[in-house]
Amino acid sequence: MSQPQIIIDLNEELRIVCRLLYYNIPGFCPNAKELQKKCQDEGFQNFQLPDISKWLGYQYSYQIYRQLLPCKAEASFSKIKIPNKVHQCDILLHTHDDQDGRRVFVCSFLIIDVATRYKEGRSLTSRNSLEIWNAVEEIYEDPSNPLTWPELLMTDGDASFRDAFSRGMEQHNVPIRVVDLYSFESLALIKAFKKNLAKLIYKVQYAIEGRLAERERSRLWNKILKKYIDFMNN
Image (cartoon, helix red, strand yellow):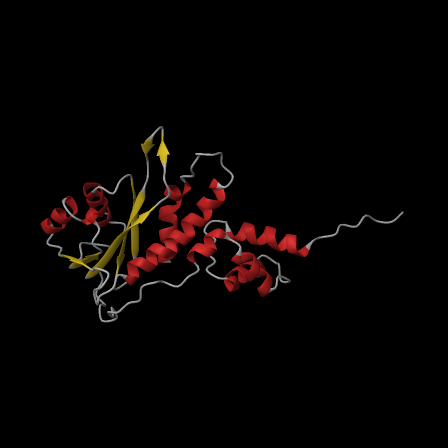
């Protein structure tokens, strides 16, 4: 009596392994080479780079963020070597999230130190300037992180950084420099932080929401936001 044979489809095996590694936490694989390295670390030495690259090209989250940054730094920050001298901040919008008709978390406030590239962020339930100001105070007055009130804060022209936010910064003698689209200066550091964080968060969120019922939303990003920022700091 012959022994039963199990035929393994290598293409299917590659898809299963890549999906488990790519959509895992933190699972940050910006390109096919990094994903191949993770596969090799898990013992899958026979996966070829062209096959992994082909699989990665079909992933929706990779298609969104695979383009290069549209903005390039026109001003050099290499001369800024003193921590907490210049900070940049921005807002990362999230997918529509509601609960019983009430908006829950709609965005995250992000900030980065130009000299050390240290990053911090907080989840917000609105883009109200007062709530953003409360998030800033929480970050700067937290003794567990190295960020303190800077000598200069760079932002874009978003209305969320006016009113209560602007008045609060004045109380701490922190000038705000608005960098518009046509300025010779650049917000490339915070924009890169924002884009890379979105890669990490949305990749997992899309994978989870794809299995949920209609109108259901995953709020996992709110739980793992701090973990991902710590991962990027290290």
